[in-house]
Image (cartoon, rainbow over all chains, first blue to last red; front, top):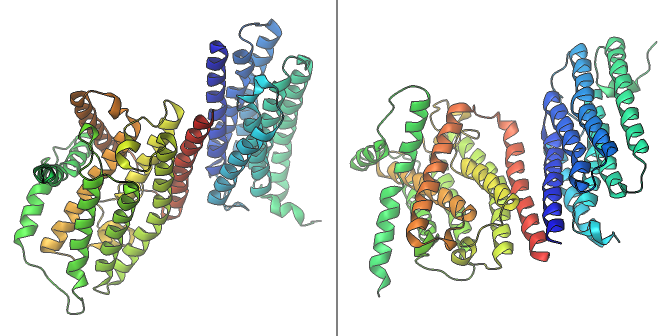
Length: 220
Length: 304
């Protein structure tokens, strides 16, 4: 029992770190900071299965964890940075939702997620951890970034943080979900970001800007 | 009337030690920049010099020009006396004295802004506007920090509120970070305001006191140093488990903590540039959120 408490303490600390990274992502005006926060969150969440299952460590879990850390921590941010360099942009200018309002929205969402997760009928082994509030908070943060940012790359980061939240929720079912599903999602995300990198380059060439507001006007 | 000698001793300690802190900060900044820097006791010399000088008063100014700094100084000293000093406790302690502390700080700020606007100078109006608008955000963060201490200790009096720790680990770290940003903002230190700048367009605190001279200026400067000492003591006591140590160790921990905070402020001033004005609300909101999350941790921890 004591070990379980200690374990959930470490887990909660890691999830709290991920929540803090959500807020950093919401408050940063520079794209490199946003990408770094997103990739760090991916890596932090990537080692979560190792922490949760360190008693019955399976080689498949280790492989998935390593693949997650490599994919979300290095491969995807690398692709995004390349797209950013190709498009020659450094920072986000005047988003739809300002940085202070989006920070407050994100904090309000985190607190609401904490309050809501209490009233959800969870399994007793998940009741003490922050898994559910953490995943809800990351999903909300992803939504805020998707809605509130004008640049395509920021929106991609929002999408990836949203995916981090879904992944965190999936960890609740770590015993029953086949690991194939997890790795399939990871592959999908990587390919998605790869394609988005190409699309970003095309948008930049066609419109001379990555501002998605300009995509709403038709051109010959 | 056994507490009168203690009160006098405490008052003397606060008044005499406070001007040391800006001196230490300036020394740290000078050392990092590779200069010798002014002596640590520079502020004492400045205060003595200002005290001997006369006051230049504008014809337009009402007596508020002199009353403002005086009331602000008294309010800050009163707030300082309310703050318990580790094992010695506070001079007076009652339910809800933390509210009085917050309001005394607000009164001091109001009086400084009032005195600044007495001469009708545009720069001082601008400085007051900036000081007060930042204070709104910093005060929210300070109140969130106080609330988290209240929730954690279950008491609304400063002496019992500050003696236990603010929860080991995450809660205390969040609270420390939040309170440190509040300290920098409230005392007009570098990411918010540069105390060395003399370009009126970018000044905040310094712009407010441009027209003051002589003893009122000395009162303002001394009050500012008391405020700095007050905030660093509050930060140290909120984070360190002072109440669980022996009196000697607690005194040592307090002194070491305040010194660490002061050196930290000096290092930040050396390595960081001032933020652009429109970025300041973001940093203050972050401080507010840090304190809010430490409140959340205290609340969650208390429920389990």
